[in-house]
Image 1: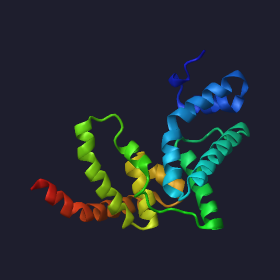
Image 2: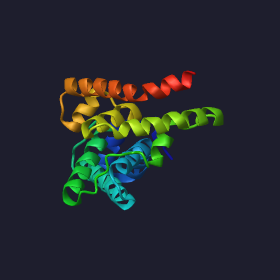
Image 3: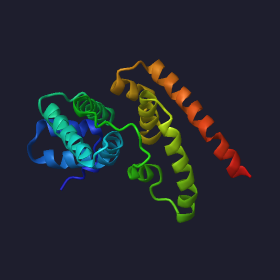
Image 4: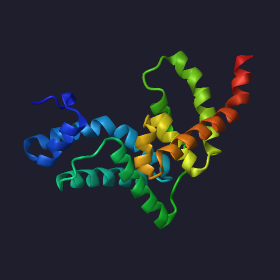
Length: 194
């Protein structure tokens, strides 16, 4: 059995496109690389868990169908985020079950603090809660940019491709958002230094 973990994303996409015996292994590797981040994003944006699950599954179906039909010149993970974002916006336009808050999203804790010691985890829990509160004071575009940049780790260029906004506007929004978050966090940071 091949070790698909040694393949880069472009090679895996090519194997999915060709199909055959290696399709399942190549897809599993792409899924393993990106499923946690993608599900967390879907969960963050949907108020109802079944909606997040549906969008998550639909995103993978669209990805596979698109690759099988010949679109192989794509960049992961931001291509997946683009699909998920479009599905979420379509669903939000239909039934307004669109969540702009991650305050009650336990997946955020997992993204921020995987594999840390208990002591470090306890220290981070307070900061995580404060960041979640600060997040609620951001507008929709700021929330999405903040989440994609700081929790998913996408570049301004990748976020630009997902949202359709210019790279300069993403950089500017990211900077302003971080300033706003830091201003909200300032009293808490001062209290923790005492």
